[in-house]
Length: 422
Image (cartoon, rainbow, N blue to C red):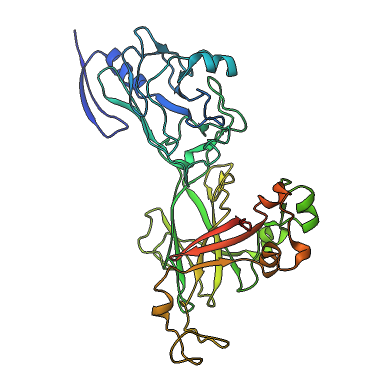
């Protein structure tokens, strides 16, 4: 009998020399076509045993899962005789009875351990202990955020996508979809956006800012665009408008109204990002795109977003931060540092009025900055008694009604909601 010698490189970069019948080759191929397709790591009700992992067979032949196991994330070994047919789904559940009662789907399990709500690596291995697929998921950009306790699972956009990249996943549209086509499925996943950075982290008014991002796509990248919005000192633009005092007293839990000025396209400038060694780009064709934002006046808040499109006949497009990200944009603060301070009314310094406190003294304690609209902070502080909230109106008093950007140690936390404590 003649044997075929076959050299295969697996998706994990492991080289294998197989000497055997062509049937063995087909088995190896089938083994590599099982993918982690859906992960539900944090159910909305945290006492519900609703966690699960779904795998999917992208191939055209059944795969024998006997003795396969999860070797990271959860602890589970597939029983003898377990298999997964072509284009089939299989759910491995924390509590199969619970999954059956909620989704009417049969599953394997229960597994030992639990999926981390803070992100971790989930690894599926074959009966020989060799990795078949792994996902090291996270809970921050570029991973989906609505999968973290909001009722949604984390779904792969397409089984062919690189599932170890956060942009290949999206929160399910509503409830999870164990054992069925993902609600987030798309024939053409958009480009992968990750590794977003700007430098300097906190530029001065004399420095321009370089924004870089890694963007890839199997179809090639058509374009990458940087959009930025400048917010002048004393003129903060909230994404949502606060409730009026009357509205706040009537119902503090009602949703806030989007501010049209924030999303107004005319308030966002456009820079085309490059990967050709020009315009500040360091290395051409390395998938790192670069855009330059001009220098901005002292105390200017700068927000930015990144959009990308691929070369598919029907281009996939994406904008970062993603739609489920409450940060809404990336941001930095143009700042020349804490200036000297000279008291004009009173002072405890032995030199009396006229003594200037230097920046080193002023920054010997942490410096926190809240950037917000003047009318909002005045309404919040309620120096005007007509703006005060009665202590018995708990709904109004607990409402984070006002929005601002919080700056500490050079990092901007934009669109933070605040209220008066007490």
